[in-house]
Amino acid sequence: MRYTYQDSTDLPIQRDFIQDIKDLIEIASKALSLENDAIEVNEIDMRDISSLENRIIELENFANDVKTYVRSISFNVDNVEILDCHNAIMDACDTSVGIGLHDLKKELDQKKREHELHINELEKKMFPTLNPLFEDGIYGAIKTYSVRFDNGSMKGELKASIYGVEYESEILYKNGPLLMREVYGNIQLPVWAKTGIIHKENKIRMIDVSDFMITNIDLNGDSHLELTFWNKKQDQQFKIMFNPQAIQIFHGNNDITADKILSQSIEIDRVRSLGLEINRFLEMSIMSQQLKKVMLDGKDAVRNNEVFDCFKIIMERYGDIVRECTDRGIVKNEITIKVERTDGTRTEKYVAKEELFNKLAELGSEGLELASILNVE
Image (cartoon, rainbow, N blue to C red):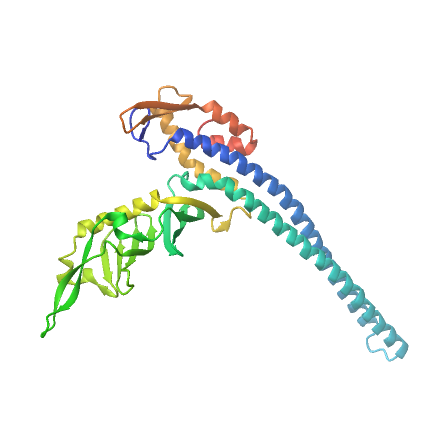
């Protein structure tokens, strides 16, 4: 599938932008409704918590004032009856205040537990609501993958960021134990080996790593890829590290690429292609992806009720494409793209700006702000 503007220029994101922007607005509507309800509950919770905390402080201050006053009027007094009265007042104050503080702190702890429960309930609703968007609808996000094999399953973690918005997801892949040949086919790497019956000498040996099992993958966008794989006996390990400047290949702790002789036997073009295939494989083999965290400027966006601010940042990229659609399109009040299928069939998809604006306007002032960012006002 090829996606273009109406003037046949490729879209910067090769996706069905019309469907994506509709999904974006639908998800935003549900998420902001949840967040607004949470803000209202949060305000009530925090008002109650603050009131209890203030009552505790007031009671503690009152007790201190009473004790300070009693000490001041009984200072240097030798009268036994007055001293008895002094002690009785102090004891009564401690007892009464102790009971009051115990009850207030118990109520405060209960209120904080209820507040935490409200936050947990929000997360249980918010993350599934946001998950379809964060699966593949965050245009321009820089992604980092970490893949591991656990009890026969291929699992991973995705961390991504865009302009202050960071998010993390747990990933389950389709494949179980993964062999090198499943990703790229046959590939051989050179190592030193001892040969000869009487006189041992080092000679280059090409090891076919096609049946080696991949045990770890770390991918940081286009800047770094680290691939680790072992043979079935678990006595030989290779690691390939891909960077924009160079490729390093390790056999155990030995850097093959640093060896002038061994490095000549490396099919470096095939190794470089392997890096590209790993990247493609990770994108194509995701079976499920579950959003676990959304951060804004290093703080929990869901707990702090800042999901709306995250949407403003995410929608900026969509707004740029809407502007381009308008500039390159024929009908200025519509967002139109062309879709070219693999069989050569060409169709157009469009949505009226007014339709998107009306849906956002239902969200009130927040929706109108988002409409402006999306350039559909």
